[in-house]
Image 1 (spheres, helix red, strand yellow):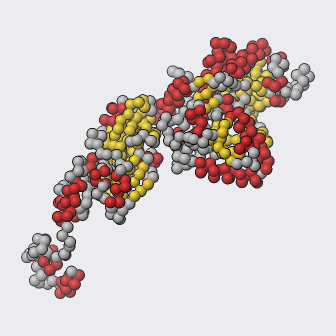
Image 2: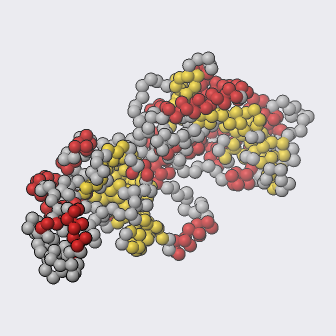
Image 3: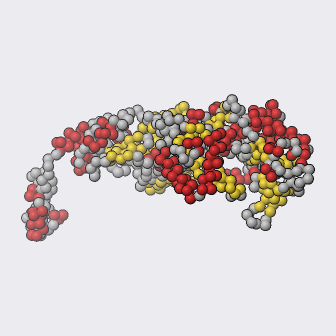
Length: 624
């Protein structure tokens, strides 16, 4: 063929008629037809190809005659269960398009109606290959996605409602089609059978990378379709029709145009805030937070429901509550390797700093005695997590170490903190606590000993808090697995759980020990430090002793008591007083300067001094 074309070019002959060199093929008025194929070229220039039309027709009929397979390609579309956090019992099975070219996620209006969820009205600036446009939509928060077998749960933080999801049913991967491609047959058994009664109602974009991230890829030839596995299941991507591209339109009777084909295209969406919404947001800064009561997000409400339903009191008085997981079926990757690597780093630090190692071991003795237990050998797959730990020194308390557990350590991009509900902010306002502290003449301060470690974790959740340490704390013994029995520093949920348990103790003890003590615990504590002022020493002693009784009944200890009144201090044993006055003779010695919530409290003069900047001479005085 090459030689023939070269001959025509050399002689400058017309390839349409082959008779003259006076014109070119595009100007030819006497074009001949090929006797082999009927095409508009000379028979001598016919390119002989293998005659595969009949075989192609048979293969394509096999694939394209499958139910709803009237297209030639498949996309990353998988069946998923969708529910809302506020009503997890109501769920729908839909097909979801996993589209890494969209920067937001969408749900169909039909699915929104089925789940009976509402969302704030908003405008979206939608940019696709066809241009940019502004559309009205609903902003839905709190959706949860599960794979078909309900082994994994993924939170979809935000989804925008659309009339429909742009995907054709022929793009949904089907086992019958996959079986015609030898390199993909191993995937067919793991695929969910196609169901034409399930709607394509969800599109998950790259704003949820956990869902669309490839976990495994199976490829064939360069132009063959390939399989991709995500947490939500297997999908097939590429052309699955068995005919060649040139004959596909004829044999498969394709008659679509680019304008009418439905497929996922690179798209971006941007939420547009109208001026009225901006003004409303700004006005919130000036609104009274107490008007109408405290408002909670959906996740906060879920946290409170979990606490109210599952908190219980142990025989020893301590409260026990679960780890508030975002979803009850949370499955975490096995991350012991991460903990082992961090353990090696910690040991290297021990070798470099013997004093650090000595302080660390001493701290961990108390942890093993009261807060941890040896982990059992058996555990549920996906329900075990290893928490690395490290030690930090208090910047203003030299030599005092605290071991912090790193619940944010990631494995495969996932950490324990990612799956915990933070809960509402139940902490009292710092400014309010300080101002009430200087209201009356007699001021008193108390502290809850080891507050986090007095609130226990439900036994079924303790495997999520495993850690590595030497057996019995002896560096000469083997490293074994322990697990925490209490809520620990480093977990996102711990402050919320501690505050909830502390206020629960006040509520439970109010009837027996009085409202003054319960109010002190509920309203005058900032985390574990309580500051209160009353009119007389008798009121102070009564309130503090009642508060101690409430705490004791809940397994808590209120100690480190300090007051500007010596009569109040003399009413409590030395072991319950603040460390700075334990050795003082209250009849003779003056009271020292104490720290309370970052404030230097000059007890003898009954004034408070707050340093705004370290080393600065600018102070704020709170005097009687």
